[in-house]
Length: 146
Image (cartoon, rainbow, N blue to C red; front, side, top):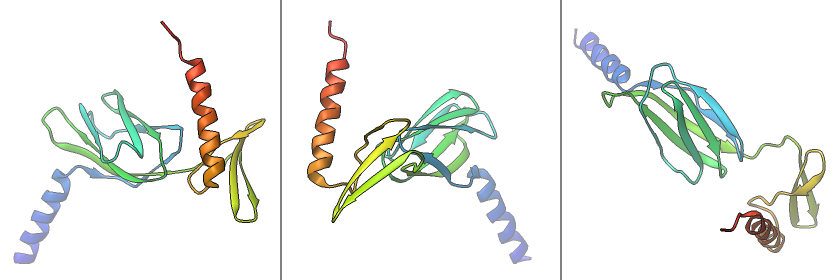
């Protein structure tokens, strides 16, 4: 009897905590689409440095990977109840990736279709810093000025 009561309480707690979903795989610098099982009005992400999330409509979430790592997300309905919970795993996509090793140094490139520098954590520090400086200079030159 106590066992059945405990099982009923556990089931109630798990159901009220929202749908615990399988982990979401999100490549770095790409957006992944997620359909929620129920309408939601509020989203929360554990670490915005790893991934960002946006509610497109009440059942569609856009997840963008920023840095390799794991974080989590919650979706709440209008009443503030959790309707969806999932971990988000962000990793570099190896599609079109080229890594050049020179002894202990590594340089990363994205080759789609031409190869361009794509600095990643783990690359040679000097090369990584130089490439990021170049990328930032290019961004600044492309920023509209008033």
